[in-house]
Image (cartoon, rainbow, N blue to C red):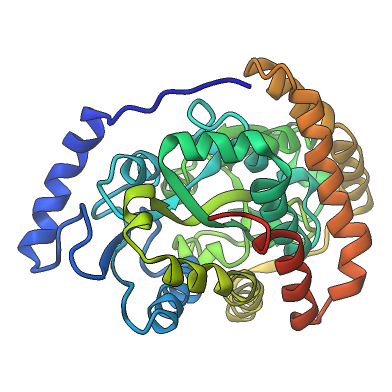
Length: 382
């Protein structure tokens, strides 16, 4: 197993110091060690996003209720204190007590854990994907657990979203329509899929996608439906191919700095973990599945929605068949001697959740929570 050293980054602190001063000027508590029971939660995700409004913020409120107010939060969102790019560093270095980070941006710091974020092409059902990635992270991958522990970070859940759709600024309904177009993508799996469609992938941060589409630097993007509203694309996108094209996975919506986590009593930590099976269901339902439907309904008169043609579906099947090999190649590129075995275990867990467990819990919240608790949250010593 590889070993990693994590030292506080002066650059991270310098970058964030100006934002911290701005927060103080607003009369909000500065980030750093928690005073009393109030912890600072920082995220670069826009405050208006469904991931925050229907996902993270309700979980933080549930934690406060479950601990009778002993653990409360000051949320500072939208990059005011930590950005999407430096979220991991901000949590690790204690700039915030808790926060959000994206797995795909931590390949050098978390080479095992971040493999989960590269499994977009294997995701089919959002609930099965959410269950699989939490089981992989907390139970099935010892290397993942070791590296976050060494980083001084305590994730309490891992997130996926809803299926990706192809969104374009000009009409598009078939694979032939997409050939030759430029598409803004966040991750390497999406880039590989774009290439399989004959498109030119343009790697972008999520916040750069809107200006890229507006300025004609990209013709399309590949995102979940709810993100049209979260990232302000509703006046730019004119056509959407709804065919599910994977599910982005592996972001961590709530992770604690270990020192801040250990200031919470054991009883309250146990109460927080007990919330997680329900929190996972609520997160994917309220922040993504429900919001997808609402966003689609709100755009019915402005956007053309298409199901995708037979050629596109055939290409998707071929793309998925090659994703396991792509993941193993990535693991080898990172120098993970046991990478093939790690990927095989991760893929097996995806298949268990989609093929064996999904028929057991589909549409049944109580059954999902029971399975997730038995397989994940009752086993991991947070």
